[in-house]
Image (cartoon, rainbow, N blue to C red):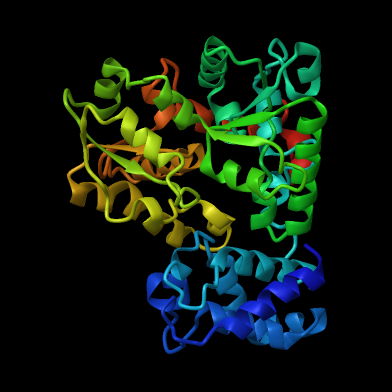
Length: 411
């Protein structure tokens, strides 16, 4: 996104907003003490700044506005009921872009998630720990294999659960698909960092690579990846398929022994944590059909009313507390209120966030504060995520023989 397009997005939101304040009560970021801070008010402040110098001056005079932009998880929950039809996600992405272009924010905290570079946290993790898929058809040689379907597991699944990734790939083959694998990221971390222009360019290259390789359809594990592919220039002719749709159509059901083991209960009550990128139910709808033989309940926020798990927008870089509260709401408070014993996340990044929250509980000696959790694929295939192992490997990367190299490449 260039300065002109980002500024246009912000100015348009400022002009359309009637300042009714409907968005403010729906998000803690929009309710600082004594200030009627709304999406439109934020947009107006930046629009009035006019240029990079003005944004820099605004940031100096009103650091609270910068803090508000950086604390936004960009899940769009605040503007679901906006009478003016303003969508918070593109507005806050544009606000972050303006801050970056004005030099107010930089790459601090985002050096490890610049996924348009060769080395980032996911590619480095796979390289250090020997996670390769070179024995499988990959996007790079898809045409040679005659593949017309691309399996896109997303960076978390491909990096942190390689055996599960392989199991899903094998299942797609068993369904008769000529499939190739991509271990690329969808580009969303770039958007969180305020690098929307780089995000769009990265997605465009990814879509071009797929089309030139003869790919006709993309099978997606994660709703967030689906969002990025849907808005990628050059991907217009590709069919985007949510993996749960294929699983439900094939009659997939949870493995009883894994369901019992993960929940710690013979007949667990299950609830679903819908990603904030899945308000249309393309993932959550089929998942509910897969689990319709068991006891299922709904949390207060689900489906079109879904909220953030705590990870979106890389908010932990500026306010870990607000991330923890969001994770606690999603993993503990709402599931317990609904009577659930197992939370099934439809996004691997949400599962990572829940694992981190449970790890924090353990470090404080609090034990499991609420229901168990998993990512939906863990209940449908034998392999799963080894979260203690994942966190241990993430930490060991920096203290082992590759530590100096990682520090040079990623810090």
